[in-house]
Amino acid sequence: MNKTMATTINLTLKVWRQKDRNTPGRFEIYCADHIDTDMSFLEMLDVVNEKLIKEGKEPIAFDHDCREGICGLCGAMVNGQAHGPLRDTTLCQLHMRHFQNNATLVIEPWRSRAFPVIKDLVVDRSAFDRIAMAGGFISIKTGSAPEAHTLLVSKSKSDMAMDAAACIACAACVAACPNGSAMLYTAAKAGHLNLLPQGQPEKDQRTLSLVQQMDREGFGHCSNIYECEAACPKGISVTNITRLNRDYFLASRSREQKV
Image (cartoon, rainbow, N blue to C red; front, side, top):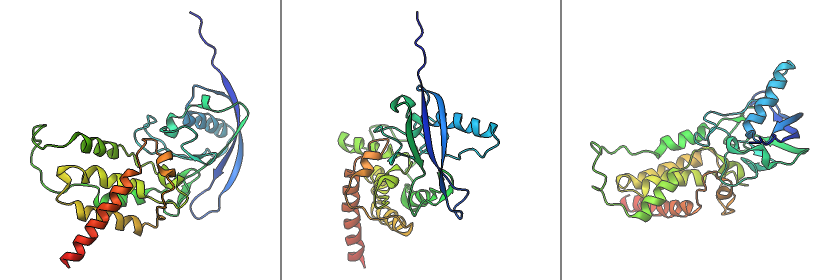
């Protein structure tokens, strides 16, 4: 059997470099030569970093962990697109065969007031953690694991809850949104719990807490541009935002009536 020869490409990288959050950043240009098109985007950055280290230069800092599109840790803007040009794909799962030979790639960190740059392409996304801690959980004691069919859940609601729970908190939605809104992430956190029976006792408080914490973090407002849905590597729908707006309105009215 004949083995297919690996294809390589040459790229020019225009990468954002920033020492820390208090130091002004700048773009630096690097040549990425003979890049195997079967490499992932992060593997390409690994090759560039190996070259920089051999030259005694500071490697490019970028977030990564599982490299399987699961953890949500990786992420960068590539030519102005969160996670690059492919839909439903994380940066670590984006392969170099999707780029043309001799192309120029502009690589930047997520841009958001709520995500200050730590170094180069690494940003502080702890604002997402604080939103999740504000209400992305169930504290009601549910006892031991019940039988699968003890609680009846409709197929439509279970599907919507699972789709919302697919969020990996990568923050591409915020980076892609012209307003820097975190509504899709917050809506996913609320949705996958609010749709299920186990989440009903704390639904109102959860919804209010999540939205209030999101506002405290300094994210922008949602104006229904839908860039968040387009950039989401898990394809989470903006219908979750509609559901969150409804739940927030009802929870606010309920609180006012109690007062």
